[in-house]
Length: 97
Image (cartoon, rainbow, N blue to C red):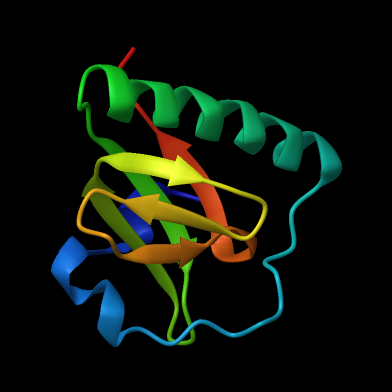
């Protein structure tokens, strides 16, 4: 899946999105890699206030947001703005090297 196919939105618009309860379909290795990326993104956000690009799917389709991740648990990602994205709807996290 190409990230360019995603509609980029502002983090301030996340509250307007609808997220279905069903998780996106990802392979187990993909989920494991996503967990590693998420842990790194949280460290980046807290330590360096660095931004990442989160690719996710809402009720309308593929979206992306560029922001700082403050924290995450097994249910959601919490962003700098206080907005959340359900972890079950996240497809990928891209960060600078």
